[in-house]
Amino acid sequence: MRTGSFAVRLLVGFAALALLAVVMAVGGGWAERAAMAAWGQRASHVSELYSAGLESALAKYDYVPKTLALHPSVLDALRHPGDGARAATANQYLERLNAEAGAGDLYLLDPSGRVLAASNWRAPLSFVGMDLSYRPYFQDAARRGEGRFYGVGTTNGRPGYYFAVAIRDGDHVLGVAAAKVSLERIEERWAPGDERVFVADGLGVVILTSVPSWKFGMTAALSEPMWTTASLTRQYGAVTLKPLPVEEREDRGDGARVVALAENDAPTVAYLAHTRALPGTGWRMTILSPLDPFRQAGREAALVSGLGGVVLLLILLALAQRHAAFRQQMAAKAALQRANDVLEERVTARTAALCAAQAELIQKEKLAVLGQMAAGIVHELNQPLAALRMMIDNAAVFLRREQPDAVLDNLASSTRLVDRMGRITGPLRSFAHRSGDPVPCRIQSCAANALSFLDERIRRAGVRVDKAGIPDTLAVPGDPERLEQVLLNLFSNALDALAEREAPCLRVSAARVADRVVIEVQDNGPGIPPDVAARLFEPFFTTKPIGQGLGLGLVISAAIVGELGGTLRHQSETPEDGGGCVFTLDLPAADPIPLSTIKEPQCPTA
Ligand code: ADP
Image 1 (cartoon, rainbow, N blue to C red):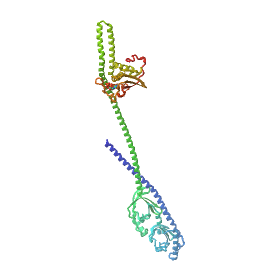
Image 2 (cartoon, helix red, strand yellow):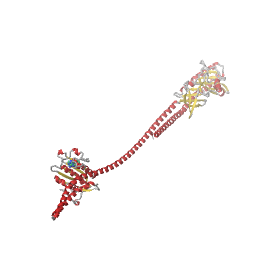
Image 3 (spheres, rainbow, N blue to C red):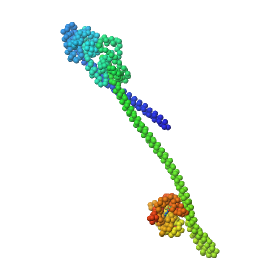
Image 4 (cartoon, rainbow, N blue to C red):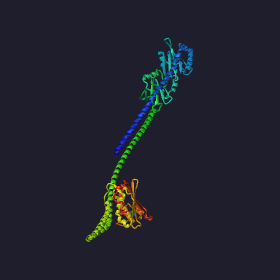
């Protein structure tokens, strides 16, 4: 069972980890893609901007050779190629125009490609006199009227862009006007941040770039014919081309791709690249952004997703735990309820058993008391029996003497004795039997019956009995014989206590208090000392000599009173305080008994 739940937990744990990994991968990938897509869009705009900048920079100088071609000094010099003065005038004009236009160099070539005049005529490395017929811009202009070319200067070794235009006289080409523009300024404005920019020409050679070490790098190997052309035109002058391998790694869509290349001798770096063609030039501009920040963004997003996932998992876990705790609580509650039910059943069963045992005990105690009482009754009956025997003998004598009156007297006395004996044995019956349904017990009758049983003892001890305090109609529900038994026991104890007391008095009174009836049995005996009082209701506790007391009277009485729904208490003055003792019975009240139904004499022994 435990192994099973452990395996399930392990499985759930692995599933949660797998889920977390998926969430991280998806979150990270998504963030990386989103960042790259945003960059792709931006790069497209930026390259558009750069290419527009380049175009406008070039366009700015486009007019220069055209303007130059129209000037009379230029035409004059071309028309008179050998004239040094005309060439000097043209030189000055070119110098002035170049200063105004801010171009790199301006020069004039004759139809054979030799420089007739140049703006830099004063410089030691002036173009004047140089043969530039091999340059494509010259050839294009001479052939088609216009030529453009990127190349490295053969004299000063500085790269530039060449604009050339043919100067015609009708169909005849007089010469070519050319302007060389430096593009270094444009490069300087590119990619101020982490981004890199390069422009590769038609041969794949990097001619413009924000990274100096990439300049003149070959992004692709030059084929033999390409190589030859480049050499013939001295396009790259004295510059040594070096390979700049661009390793294409991955196409990310939307024009963006991942490439790798190195700066100087540094290790290869991965970039996100965006390339666009620059119209009218055959060049291609590439904008590069290091890939690491995108990866970093992806990693951060993965981390955030992971954290989110963890938080989610924790919430789920907490919910699951709460659910489990709730279920446990419910189970515990149910278990408690079951335990409670079992306990209640046991308590009920035990209570029933105890009740049975108690009833049994009471019954046994009653039998024991019966035994004790039997001794007393035998003692009580002995004397009337002896008297009866004597009277019967006397009656026989009187009969023989034919004295019928005396016989009748004797018989009448005998009848009284038999009645008395009946009264003595009567209460015995109530001890042994179990009680039936409750009936109203008139307290006065019960007290009178109990007292009648003790008639002889009361008379002998000269005890004054006061039972005037019992209202005629007062009653309690129960079994009259049992109530009599309780009262008899209390009276009997009182008589015991009153033995050898001066002016012995037994007072019994009753009163209704709300729905209860309180009966008091009071004597002026010695009272009960505290040590005895503490044990009064203990079975077999007695202070009386053997044969006189069994110590069960109060136990049985209290049990009977309990059965009747009442209590038996005692208050006592200690012998030192002058004595006296009161036993109080507190019982439920029954409806008063109508006086008209009461037949028996109310105070038989009063
Ligand atoms: P028993 O009468 O057989 O001794 P009880 O249970 O009736 O048994 O009484 C227990 C004891 O309580 C008596 O032995 C006696 O010491 C004491 N007792 C009961 N009633 C009185 C009383 N009215 N005055 C003094 N002592 C009493």
